[in-house]
Image (tube, rainbow, N blue to C red; front, side, top):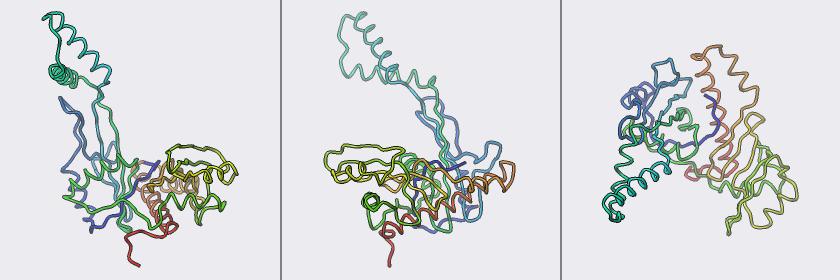
Amino acid sequence: MPFKQLTFYRIADTLPAPDIVAAKLAEYPFSPCLGLDWFSEGFAPVLPNSGSLTCIAGNTLGFILHREEKVLPPSLISAKVDETVRRIAQAEHRPVGKRERHEIRERVVDALLPQALAKPSRTYAVIDYARSLLLVNAAPKAAENLLAKLREALGGLASRLPETRRQPAHVMTEWLPEGEATEPFELGDSGTFKHTQCGAKITAAKENLTDNRIAGLLQGGKTVRELGLIWRGQVAFSLTDELALRRIKFADQITEEVKRQGDDADTLFPAEQLIQAENLAALVGDLAEAAGGWADDVE
């Protein structure tokens, strides 16, 4: 399962052994969203035809949180409520108050919920034991949800979002006037710029980021909030000011390296997991170094 985005956490606890983690996750399996439940979530097999909830590859352990969430369009609820309110008003010749309308809405939702479609989603994550990292293939909100479920399963897990000594936005903003990023990074061709006071935002795509027009944006009081970068010629991505990675794309040589490991899912999945996790963990380490190191590391 290729990483398309990355939210990562630094783990402070001593992690349980992989077999213990697998056993803990098995106590919280996924089951379909039924009845009046708005959502259901739990850990699911990493491969559709596999009974295993985890994938162990080298010093990494991968797992998936499966979630189903009921979808009820607000317009449908409002239409049903309005219809019921009109029927009561006509039949009983009286207005329907705010409190009664709220109760009607609750009954409408209860009636519609069992029939609602459940929208599925799968969030893939990898624990890197060697570097004490949790790598989540998701945006921050979904990553936080997975972390909360993992903590529940493990009975707690001390972890923290990454924080560097220098703010990523300041580092990225300094790179552009210099015309280059700190090695081993290269500037890409996209960026998002936001004014520090009024909040006005401009997005550039397929642009020369060293162009005078970009420099003009920075001189006008804007800072870089997201920047396209290339790491060691191996991984192209967009870095946010929260140290999250978006639009990740691995170089052909990495994908070819994965393919050389085998020709079936049981072989390819752990190979892809290990190769991607090793590259992403190294990338994250280089990002921290470019931003002055981790804020909580002791020199």
